[in-house]
Length: 450
Ligand code: PHE
Image (cartoon, rainbow, N blue to C red; front, side, top):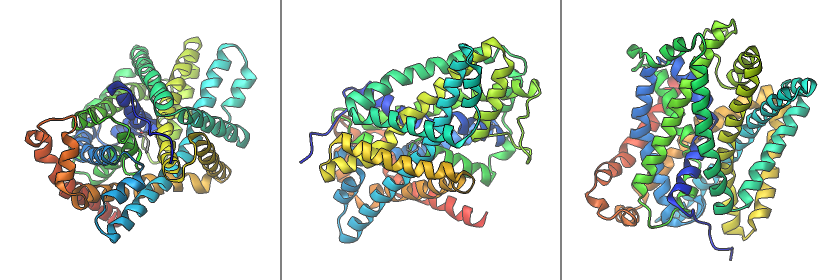
């Protein structure tokens, strides 16, 4: 049999690891621009409701299943099954989650590689190595392949060190640094001309947009991606939580932290974009929407930093350190999903599983790098828009329909005495049975007719 399972050593460690997984590129470039393009605070409002009404129950389903089974997603879902059909479904969903998360990691590593290249470029600027800096900032197959591989190696190094000594240790160091850097950057950007226009764009609601289906779709996709749902990440982190901890409270804190950091990132990104506009940098794309995603991070913001002169180099360094941290604490949670499966069911060592999986995923990343225009958007859209919510649907089916209520309650009561009288138990079972699956289906139906 394999070595004893890892466990987070403290509540703080779990919170940092799980919120580290949740807080990633999705929060920093996804949320703010999504909000600005979809009615500002109206989006924020819809997002908050969806995050608590849909994403939080779905997160809880994964955490509860994970801690109950103390195993990887495939074993966990099979264990809940009561018939050959549900066992087969469990295996399928577990495997589909592993495959999806591996593909998410394959594109995530490319973008994270860019973040590292820009971080080093800022460092090179500071020491006056201009040629190096401009190479680092110029897209190219060599640069992109190199940094994708370096980022994957970092991810592998943290994950193979173990749950406590790798994932928990690094998340506990990196997440607080992320918050400090984020706040410092906001404070600086607020002093620049144009920042207030950004705040207005972000925070003044256009409520006529709340009923907009496009807005609902983006808010829901954003919430699922941002909380790392549907692919077994939260399930596996849940499986490392001690039976003494109060799960509904922990899940609530992770949701709050994720939302808080996304909302806070908006206070940086949108003011920075309006400062850029004020300085004559183009921030709208051809369709008149705000430049979002990679274009925002590697075109708009670097142009802004460059205009800031000496201070800009430090700001750029801080910003890309922030992005690299956000990426790494997410990528390690992605690799842990297939790794835990190999370690637990094939008796492979963490080291071997990490290296083999990491190398395999890096190969997929390189294939994407070399066929970027054809593959990148396709992989992003298949994994995050289609696969993730669909798998979230099946996790809800497992928690709401296949597993029995008593089993769930017994699990929640560990670490949460009297759970059966609490608000959570009054509401959640209904949500996970009906509201979550129906809402996800509704999104699919809308997508088909959109
Ligand atoms: N939540 C991460 C982000 O916001 C992405 C992620 C998705 C992480 C799926 C793990 C699993 O960037």
